[in-house]
Structure formats: C-alpha cells, structure tokens
Image (cartoon, rainbow, N blue to C red; front, side, top):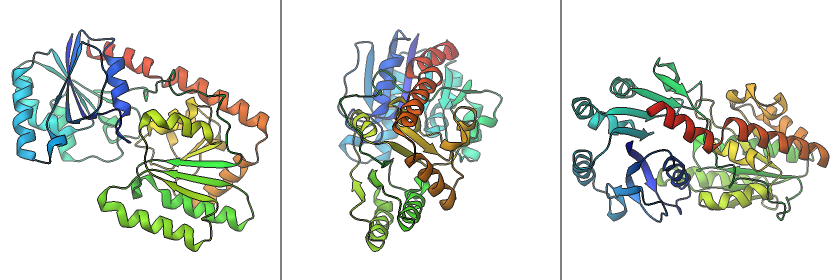
Amino acid sequence: MKLLLFTQAIDKEDPILSVYHRWVLEFSKHFGSITVICLKKGVYDLPNNVKVLSLGKENGKNKIKYIINFYKYIFGEKYDSVFIHMNQEYVLLGGIFWKIMNKKVYMWRNHHSGSLFTDIAVIFCNKIFCTSKFSYTAKYKKTSIMPVGIDTDFFDRKNDITRIPRSILFLARVAPVKKPHVLIEALILLKNRGVNFTASFYGDPLPKDESYYLSLKEKISKSLMTDSVFFFSGIPNESTVDVYNKHEIFVNLSSSGMYDKTIFESMACETLTLATNRNLEELVPESFIAKEDDVENIALKLEKLLSFSDDEKGKWGKEMRRITVEKHSLRELGNKIALAVS
C-alpha cells in the first residue's frame, strides 16, 4: 500500500517534533511506500521507500504558498490512503477531493479540546485514532484507541548514567497548558516543609508565552530556590533519553485528554513518573497519579516518591518499563496502524 502521510515536521533536530521522524521510520516497515508531506523539513534519515515533501515553512512563512503546494502534492503524488497526524486543517482542505478520488482518509488527533471544525473533518475520515479515552475525538463511533507509540529500544535504562539523588524532572514545551507553574507551587511547598530535592525544567516557550516563562523564573528567584531549581532550553527528542536517565522522578501535569508521550518515554527509562492523567488509573498504582491542578496533592505525592528506598525505586522503575513495552511501544503502534488502514 502507498500511504500519503501528513505531519507538522520531519526534523531529527526539532526539540518537540523530532519524535515523529521515528514514527515514520517505523511505519515504513509496514507500507510499500510513504510520501510524507510536512509543514517544514529539516534533518532526516529515512529509508528509500519514504519520500519527504515540504509545504515550505523552512523557507519562510507564506500561507498561500503552503496551500498551493498542498494541492500540487495531493493531486500530483501516487497513493492509496491518507494518514493525517493532528492537523485537521488538511482534512478540511482535501477531504472532499479525497472522497471524489475514492481515497481512504485516517486522522490521528489526540487533544482534550475540539470544535465544530473537528466534527466536520471527522465526516471525511474513514477512521479516527487517538490514545486517550478523554480526548475530544474519543466520542466518535469510528474512533480507535491506539498505543502512545514509544520506541522502547531507544528509550531504555542506561546503567552507565548515574541518577541525581532526589531529582525531579519537568520536560515539555513551556506553556500554561503544560502547567509548569503548578509544579513550581508544589516545589515551594516542599521547600517550606524542609524536603530536600533538585528540580530541572527542560523546554522553550513559543513567542506568545515568553512572558509566562519569565514569570516562572521570577517565581523561583523570589522563593530563594535558584540553588535547587534549574531551567534548561528544549532539546531534540534524540537527546531526552539521557535526561530521563539522570533523574529519579519525572512529572507530567497535562490534562487527561492529551496523554503526552513523555509520560511513557520516562517510564521506558525506568524513571518514576508522576502524572495527573486519569488514563493511568488502569495501569499504575495511585502513588503515581496526582489530582489535576491540586498543588497540595502533587506536593504530597512527590514527597512520598522522594522517600522511596533504592530498592523501591528500582522495583517500580522496572514495572513502569514493562507497562510501556507491553502497552505503548512504537512497534505495537506500527502493527495496529498497519492493520487499521489496510
């Protein structure tokens, strides 16, 4: 089968989107050929059966150029089915034409929010994929719940990397929706209680969130925590495995409708993972699930995890990796996607 695949970027060096380079690599094992259309392309290394085309963002922002290239590609390339990752706009632009051309359309959309435009896009799709039962798109009859898709051969425990004792990690795009401010409030509570820890925040803000990012740093400074809380720029997905391995605890506070991949990347590295995601209720003990936006509860959960013995940390780290390998590996996702669109 020849697949036309839309995604935001194909770039191994992109701090946020480089993970999808690995997805395309896995999908290439299941399809005769894949033509990837991305908004921008950068550094990539993919097999011969993968062709990468860009709408042109790497050469400057020009929405008219994007649309022209979009239609040039969907009418000029040879393919059997269409897989669209996250961007419903492509379904809205091409859906009617794909219906006329008798192409099957599949959309991956995993987010807590949606709109009338999402509902319209779904009409043109044969199937919808998401990972969270709390996603906006989980409500449709044509929706299938999928594994998160973690490369568990790459994300693994590296025994040559020593974990920083009593260390906490937050790794995400710096934005209110990711809630680093909630974690900072919890860390202030821990400090006031005399709990020893270090915390690292990895990520960059979008231009619109720059002032928000500065406010987080200012909060840490005013709380006299600059000797225990540190901020680092975002790093490519290829580099995050070492960061997970350096820390004992990873924290994710995103809503249950999102099911961030970082939850399972950290778990695959045997890093204790605390999240507010209700999807985890079926997978891990309550010690690793905090109440959403509840600063006191998050602080209490962190304090408990920090108190674990080395044996407990090792035991639960291995259990978290087992769960990820069995339930949310990229290999499992590739198999399920291939079956769903065949």
